[in-house]
Figure (cartoon, rainbow, N blue to C red):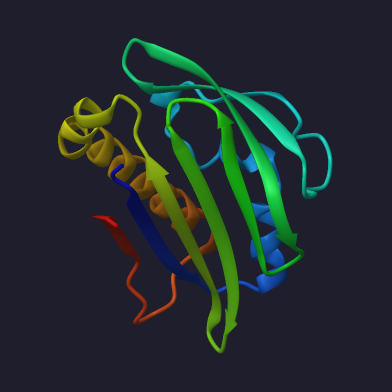
Length: 165
């Protein structure tokens, strides 16, 4: 069983509360998701985030492949972090942690995604050529959109890492 991890870190010149208000609203996922993914929320995003909340989406992770994705918000520490886990969707495992940390010059937003692909060895073979590249594009797009929305902090460089764990 091969596990992978994606880590994305950005610092923005906004308050922790502003960052939380944006990130904890599932409707904002559409703002930071590339249009080619056909992202559409079906249900569960019409209330303040809480543990046990189920959110249903339609997403097109690859051309000619549309899938219903159901995530559960499993942990919430208001203003600090939340965790969403895939219940149904394209991955065998998707565990996504979102952390906010107040800094002197703004707020650090850290995403840590642990994931596993379906299809055993075939999934592992597809990872470097298809899945890893697509995740890099998606998170690069998020980085760009969040920078457009919130600006940048001088001397802070966004970090995006994908590795096997």
